[in-house]
Image 1 (cartoon, chains in turn brown, orange, cyan):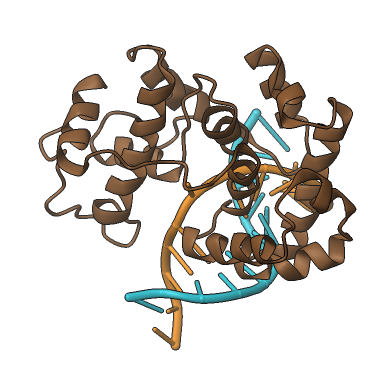
Image 2: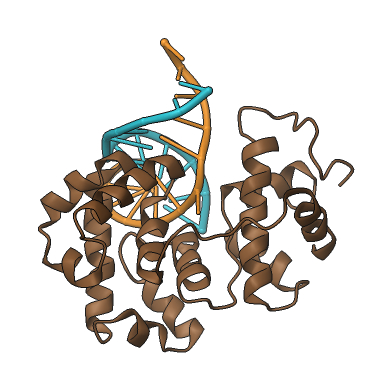
Length: 207
DNA sequence: TGCCAGGCCGGGT
DNA sequence: ACCCGGCATGGC
């Protein structure tokens, strides 16, 4: 897997993920981007920033209906507003700050995220890696599709099988995990779309 | 203009 | 234990 990483890095360079100004913003973005184009998410984030609402205290005080309206551009806005509230509740139950929440054993922290209604494996791992800076590899739809198309894993492979494929062979390093996932998304957007099964010009051709 | 995007949940079989 | 519909906006 490390050879693929170098191919992608040589081709695309550093991706500067996550596109967020603070761990809190990254966390909110991780939830809002569920099955959603980032350009829509950035509109929602902008709406919150514009009103000075992109903080734990401000969002906690905000009625869920108002929150829903502000994040409308990100799609699934009613569900996502409720899910954000669930996430805020988790922070509240764990000291009321991200620092106190993140100051836990990674595995334990991951379980707490997964216990939140609206947070699944990818969102949990995205928060762990990109907000909490824990060495956790993030798997997403692009990761799965890219590996399947290059014959590296079966269509039916589970999240954890795919994750293990990376963590078993890569150095356990936050910056590599960070860059690798971002590079896979970059590759996916350009060469591995669902609508284009041919992947013409893919830098991984031959794999 | 229909398909797709950095998922996840809940109900039915 | 799977399978599937629902959730929703904006870009191409």
